[in-house]
Image (cartoon, rainbow, N blue to C red):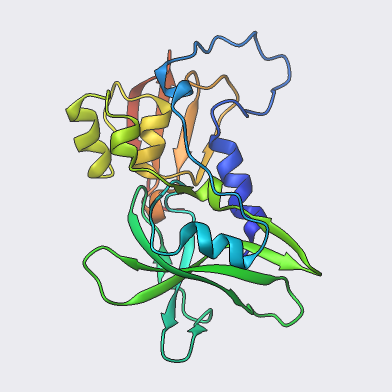
Length: 227
């Protein structure tokens, strides 16, 4: 699994990490209450500590429509990398049952650190990469791809109609960029411009949506045909 590719998509969406553009005007973004929401983190330096932090816990998908996940056999402790099950939807709640190593083809690539999980109201188990190990060195991305607390509680000051649209994976006029990302996921490409004053094209798991933001409010939402 290309952890670097996942992280690049996440970095695109990070609110304070927008890449500078040539001849860009001075930043017009004004901080909001969203910027001061505290997200808990795990502090892991190996598989054992990652398992200790996550096993038996619920997490919510922060990197929506970007994380491939795979079938997992509890009987054989095998991750079936050959048959991708899909992409984890935005804000989906996962119950983590274990953390383990798994060898992903091709042979010689970094060993993946996989979180084993169950989706809500489902007995099947699946696996998703939360990092990798190479020559004893670990790279964890769990803090980038998961919320450790329910986003509905973290952002409980958002209006009910906004949360209704997010839970339906829809963007409506008036949403800000963070809310749109919660609805459609972090797999996106942004036009030049400041956060909240640009156009963002969301991959949306194969159903692309283009959203134009002005003053950090969605003013135009367009569904696009898949190229």
